[in-house]
Length: 115
Image: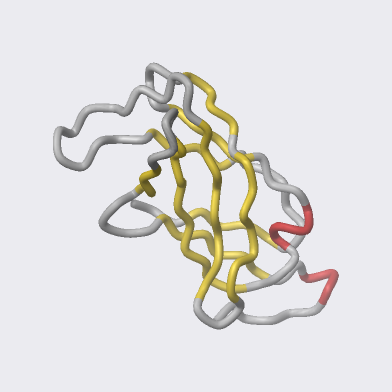
């Protein structure tokens, strides 16, 4: 998986992900489910814990639209998607790794290197 690079305060591009069953390689049908997007790192903790949008339930396609506060803190962050299925069970994707988001300093705010 490649990293997503943003500057402080950016709200585009929309973060997108396809939920895939790690055992079968097939997309997960999200009909009736809800999804949360999480982003954080070990030094800054959780930065985002918000409801994601299910773009196409049958195709397992989800998205998260940033708000400026999500990208206010510079750094390298891990992201994941938590699916809450009908009946109360949950599973987090990707199951064997994380996606990476890097937020760089906006030069109008002063130059700082992400940790």
